[in-house]
Image 1 (cartoon, rainbow, N blue to C red):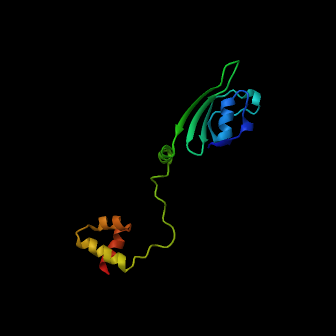
Image 2: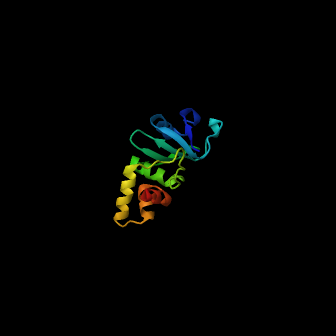
Image 3: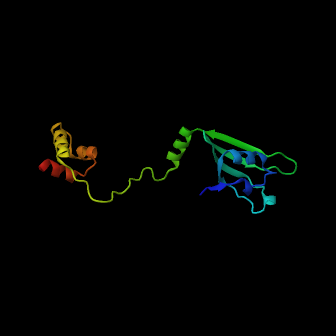
Length: 143
């Protein structure tokens, strides 16, 4: 689970570019570890940054031994974020179980079922169309 990152969590001297990103966006740590001591903050971090207009995937390698901080960003627009969320959602194909009282089909549903049957549709196709079981369709045709 991604956790939110604050400016106080990182070594601002070793990560000046990441500090700027943290001041402009809401950031979540995806991979890597934040050091308990800011002096030991030398691990590569993968971060999800959410701006108002877009989101970014950020890979940050802190500065060490006189070298500059290395940072890579990939911008993702809202459409891309939605496509990514749809792809990563493991529950998108699992139907929710129906809870509560069963649906009561009235005269309008009965008329619709009878018209579909007259048009030559099978009981299974009618059941799929109205979202009922084949037994319910048979009961509606019978009455």
